[in-house]
Image (cartoon, rainbow over all chains, first blue to last red; front, side, top):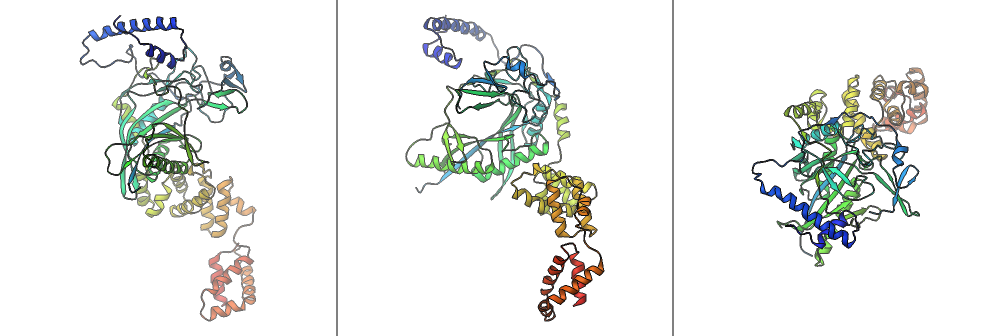
Length: 97
Length: 476
């Protein structure tokens, strides 16, 4: 494996993803991520001079909709997905700015 | 002290677009619905839902870009900005980082030292977040996603402003352009226009910028001015005491007149932007841009020139009545139904501005009908009511939907044109005020003013002052 993921990196990625990993999970994730990067590195072998960076693989563009209201009040269905509910609102753990 | 400092300010202005639906779904953007009644799987971030761009958002963004002299990015796309916060149900905000829709523009502002260009770095399209409600007593927060997915454009300026005055002038200019385009009502108090202030200070003449802070929660021009003055002072104090300004986001508390460092979201600065794979790229043809250009409205400068030419209005008038699109629209609509342009202008500059100022209202809030103003002017022209009564009636029609003709009739406000009745009152007034009569005869022309006043009072204001004046002179 050419790419070695450090303990600090896996810790940081865990924080960003809001994941708490056990030490064995961390080792596993380090090795998985290393292999992913090795795989991506293959692209570096290609000559990409003069090729525009690509963001989408399908040759589709300009998918738009008109500015017309098509959705009505579907609150009961939407709220049924909430972890908790009060007065028609999603209830979440207390969050400060 | 002794050192001279210069304030360097750049703004990030969020403008909520006046579309009927959200940016990526067909939910209504109407304000004030019961919580979560304008939501669907897309704007609540349900797995598997797919966003589709609202074409009107694109058109407004391009229109604002063209009006602010920007280059339009004809091939552009959306990116995901990743962060965790409950008001953001997808755990990412759809925004534009790599290829924003507009770049490299400017607007011209008026300053004490003449005109100045303020650079616009970029304008990008993005979605608004939901609203979090915190309960004082509960250990929970509550989320309403009605605002989630409401379209915004963020207008990012260059750090070209040097004072609170310049910032206000820039914001007024942006507001006017966006309102003229009909792209937003731009109400700071209601949050449809929001400004974050990036501010740093440096010694006058320095080439490098100082460390900047970002200030949020500024919801009036007054708060913006106070926050700029407060933050400038705070940073000067820090530097003067030999310490360093920390780059951070601060929240302005307008009641306290102070700002506080916001608790930083854990590692919030690492947004790991990447292209949104759910939204296909946008490729705008020259024809698309030409079409939007051809639909651009008449802007203020053009309107000013036309009003002076077409209606022969003085520059002073034109300056005031074109300051907001709303006012200009009322002017044009009232004149279109036959009212005299100068008289309409007088009502807008005088009474309307006075009421707006007194009630701390925005021209956007004006609701009276052009027909009502036109009728009022006609009543005054035909001398059916005098100027004083007309002003009183205007104050009523400004707030209530009345028909001035009926109102005047019902309230008995018509000028009494009965010469006999007037003659009697005038005789009475002359009899009761011998001193003023004598003064007048002794050459004190002004004494007649008092007599006119007494006559008007006796007539309960319902006389034509010019006729009263003439009749008094006749008697004297």
